[in-house]
Image 1 (tube, rainbow over the protein chains, first blue to last red):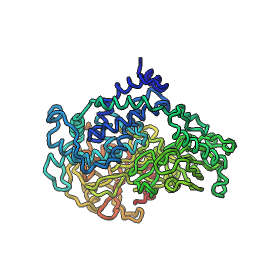
Image 2: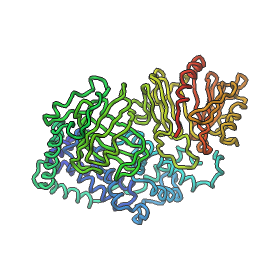
Image 3: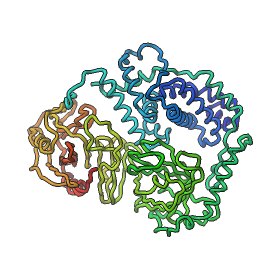
Image 4: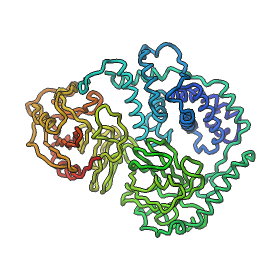
Length: 184
Length: 447
């Protein structure tokens, strides 16, 4: 049975089909939420809320082939809601569990990770979402815009800002401060 | 310095850290919830107004609430727009006739007329204060044939979600759904009109029970459906009229975080021009005939022909090494750098005033004596100016053997210099470009 078949059946109220869809998508969606929110408890709440919304709203999904993108959109909006409800950006003590001491291939140093963790918390949840969708999920900006229901320019500006902040954080950790105007 | 490519790798590696498996307890909770939670059956089969319906009885309260609103909306809607504000409709919108809606006979019967295609697009406008939302650096109205919502850079997306329909020859009506910013069922009536080619929307409020929506919608709006390089990222084909930039910020100080600077440049064009790009540090206007030959990546090699605006110009050496030279950021100092470079042949420097700002311009071509080549280039060329705070990854301006360029430096005040370049890869077209482009550049108003 294809994903489309499952979606169509779930739209008709088939809970087994919905369970299969949840099993297929929940890991990816949790990974997305965890990276946007940088908090495992908030990510669990966002995922749970989003998937229940998916069940309730499934009959309104016009194109079953767009299921995953649609779920992703609902999840990102659930992340927005969690972030705003908890207001824990500034003092988030439930840090995301990290597997392993450093990133793959030695690309990521501990200093990089700490710098990115700190800088990421300075971003709005909307900026975080675009950054994660672009760099982790691998979506192009136009698809991010489509997923989030925002103009491509909005997605672009959010990515630009997030990249600027995060890159500055990594660079600040990696090199001594250069005199203004002599960056090269 | 961490280059863009390096940063991307670091960012991806960092994002790979973290959990990838949803906890079983979450999945179980979702599946248990689905056992007792009914699905919402939305029968939004336009144009019926019975837009919300539920086929399961357990949510009686929700269904009752929806029913109240549907009935309320229906009653309000059948009043027709003429009873809402006592304002006579203005002239018919000037969209293409096929897209212009007919008067609202069907509205009076209780069904709804969809918004015409020319109106049912995304419109962007200047910052505004919206009650309950605050001020956004830029605002967007999202219309489709049957609905509306508002987004803004500082207050998120999907606000003021409403059902939208045409209610008269030049009026539309919006009715709030469950949303942020309006009470469900709030009705608003608006006058609207489009510019001759549908690029500019002018909209005014007749009445609206939702104060936030009444503050958000009225004004002048621009659509950007025709931007090739990034849908929504520039305005694409324009029409004769006055427009505003959305992203570029020519007066941003180095080190200050960039944000969308809607209206940083206001410009007036005749028919036949396009806004071909709009980025934080660059902006361009291209004749539409040339824009038609461009692809998503911009102009075809050897055929660049446009007005370009570059933010934060700084002097660089001609070798394309992108090193910054110790040249003060003033129009006089930068112009001296431009005209003294051995790589270029320059005309006499001319002075002018643009939007009250002192400006100087000069025409340039590559010197016939210049034989050096930038790395990897097959023919002689040289660099001239680069983006001050990002000379490696930011924009760079230079010339090859055949190109001609007018460099216009504008003193924007506060230590900011604006750079406008009229760029023609084909020398035979340079004179034509300067003739047609200078009136546009002289129309620039900087915020």
